[in-house]
Image (cartoon, rainbow, N blue to C red):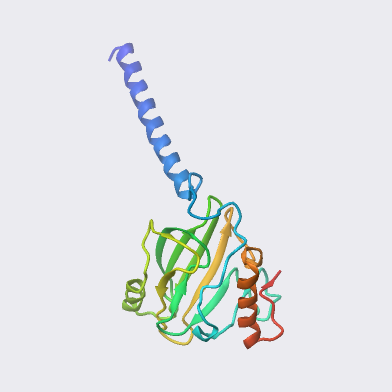
Length: 216
């Protein structure tokens, strides 16, 4: 093989690799939300007007865990979110506006096996997660819960829109709600508006009068 042909082949390989790397980088950046732009659909600079994900306190039958960064909390373990223990068939509301970014199914060992998470992206740095934890090893229950979702990937939602109905497989079934900003989970207090914060604290204090929402 001549030197000129070898150089041409090497150039083709370099170009091909560059294209593949470039496409992969664009895909990964897009998945990270770097290019995300909600336009004028809602104020997206700062999420400080979040609400709760229920219509009425009577939609909830327990409050067992808020947000904690260590075991120094009433529930005794680190828990980077809020657990909403919904009654069967109640509406789950969008706490904040955004685009349904992903519906993620995953499987774990044990009784609480089949999880489904709805990710709704608020802006390029903030994602809101609704993780449906059914506390059941029955796969058909997960599929039933998915069939009760009212949104799909790519849909835009406004605060207060119904995103699902809740399937209560048993008393332990709940939604683990969390907020990820710049790759880290945070205490949700700063994201609530005054009404939403009052509602979540009223819910907590109806079960545990001395509890806070977040513990460091």
